[in-house]
Figure 1 (cartoon, rainbow, N blue to C red):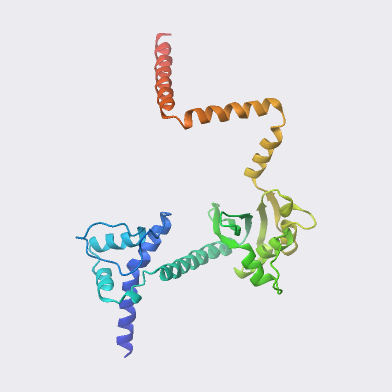
Figure 2 (figure 1 turned 180 degrees about the vertical axis):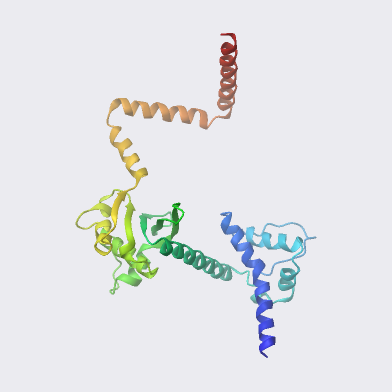
Length: 288
């Protein structure tokens, strides 16, 4: 019975392996999984008229056409409820991949000992408040790494973990700071080894009394705040636009960019003119 069970486990793993490989491939290539029609049993007959069932199912068909007999047998012999290619199973396998990747990142962070946390909060197109979180660390070979940890639904996370009442939480700087600290604790990170905090320069983040940075520094005494360079550059350009000379310069640059960006004929003429100018310069340099 034990031998038969181990044989069944090995067979089930071989069935799942090509499905997981397709999920990893699409994730690495940043391709969408699902298309317009991708439900039901997958038709493995490649002689039929070609139909686009989404990247995931088309990739499964490609593997079958390339000679993957295990996947072909699995999809042809199992019932529609046991193919492991449904939307629900895709999400579960993606979560498994996420946990594996996160585990490797955290192991690398703990191995390097010291790290910095980078985060920001914004509302996406579906009106959900998302908290982006990244970790920055230096490995033993002195290579700097910035690893994206994930997007956290702020309201759901705060509502489920940090509040006990049924009132929707208001995302103040203190709440966001506590959320980041709670996430770091959930990942079993040593708060004393956090040596840096990176955010934008808004008051919710940088307020001395009620900012998220100050709240994190209460739990991470060695963390030093470092403002985001891109936000600082954006703010400096915004402030310097009050000077008429700078404002006029930025306006001219925008008009030049839009002039050559949206009209193909002008781009073609500019390239031809640019090449003619180069040959003219070369010709004059040869003469002199």
